[in-house]
Image 1 (cartoon, one colour):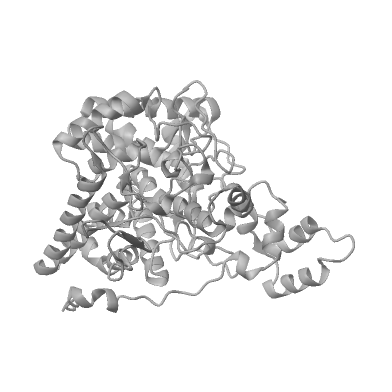
Image 2: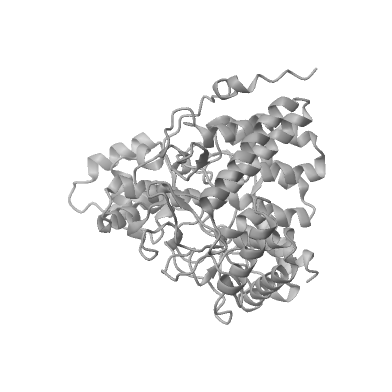
Length: 519
């Protein structure tokens, strides 16, 4: 007999999870970690954060503290002697361009797949089942990447891998109370766009509605994570991820719990904070919170639309995040209804409806015909147009009238020769022009299709497909991001690290779109 669920009034209290206590590399190696990162011993700050100690951490740290002030001490030599430096995921893999892009993607599923983890040291969060990594420097599973990777796995019929990755994330939610940005200890202080509900729904397409009810406990825990603080937040203020709007309605923001430099970009954060007019801790939290959004970094989060030093992520109520939480509330309602608890289901539907109305009230700009982020500290909409304006289409939040206007804005202002632009500005940051990214292209295209904007969706999709295939034919790779403005260049740039190949979500979205548009 199925256990009776507790009343909703007690759910948040009962579901409080005893989170696993973990230490990040900076905490395991105080002094040593900072010294290595600030010395810029490795071109990519993530390298040392991912390094595997060759012997017990206490011994390494004791030797470092004993030797660091000795004449002739060589920090790089010490690091190399005591840590195993990780390789790129796809290093050594050579593609066969002549076999075509479909064969390439099918082969990469195996190249990018990892077995269950058994690390006893290092920063990796061990996962109990097989999973797909993005590729390149991204040697671990990432949260929102996984959903878009699953689009291709579905097309390839690899339901076993999809189910394993859903089970991994359910395990992580049960262990840590949420799904971190990526499966590293230094990511635990933040999450990423909450796509777990969509992953569960995707799996349910194959295994039936029992999947929706099976993962209800984890869906509730994720919801609790994002809504933590809802009982204590005051009007016109924010607490953790929760924002109480001027009318008392509840929306959400990105907000990393930590106010220290990101360990994977330690040196970069410290140097940038020194150039910012913000307090260092405020800058660190804003940078971390942009990383939680997945859009790290772009003009969307900047006060002046130009400079990273003006980043203000925690002051903004993002359109796409609230569309995701609207969807999560709907899935929770569906799960309760499937369990026969229609009363609790209606409560979550009411929450979703209230969120939709609040989103329309505070983020819809009728004059411009677009959705914009809302600054809860200035009580004004962000002035910037971004591809996030299509999120209400993907999640069925927008009205038909709004969809008409959004389509016009996309076609007139964001559509480029290789796809749809993320933003209006070229700042040198990787989520700004001229780059295009698979997850955002996919949501925009599918959102436009959902509202009958088939011609515009097809134009954008075929341009993106052509760009991806052209880059593959010239490089033998599928890349993390692309230059959608100059398709002759095709390769994207900007950001804190070199362009990555692999690439999980690019593979997944490309295969999905090729099948939809019969390419």
